[in-house]
Length: 242
Image (cartoon, rainbow, N blue to C red; front, side, top):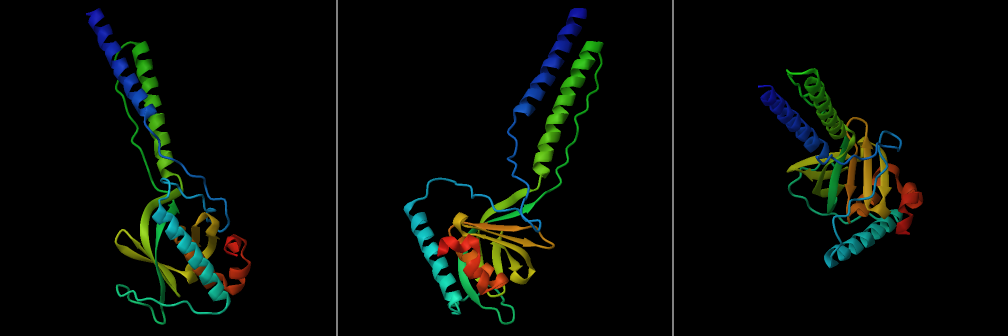
């Protein structure tokens, strides 16, 4: 009987160790750096490269860059951009539509990611109980670290979307729903055209990041609508468009 009990104890310890090892080796979610820029908005990071661009991507990027340069020059010359129709949107009073673009949408926020600690009811020798407690503690620590990584404030909700640009707002089609980001509600704007990224901060909602080949056009229009022509001419981040 003593031999059988020892075998059972050894098997239980082996199972617990294997469980702890599997959880400790599980891939952890990538973490992103906390925001460092002012107004509670992170400075935009480099866009994730998903593969080498094909010829269509390059041609589209060149066309979008040229359009951003043309738009900036036109706005500085006090020219109104051509308008388009967007029949699916009910416009606000005095609202007109300028562009129908594509972008990668992300929001910057944290979230609750609680975890349920693993409990163990152990019977046996002191050595067996001690080994079980050690393994249980290691498993709980691993699960807690994973939950903390999931809860960390980071860029989330990455999705390719459609963006309508108007004289009042940016309209983003996210998961089948049109979301409005009014220029008048923005508290910070980072028009990083060289990185093809636009980051906008708000007082009461999470920051918005739009990236992709059309982002320079979004950046030019957004900066003009929030800061005016002087910023369009002098902002250091727009110098690549000179």
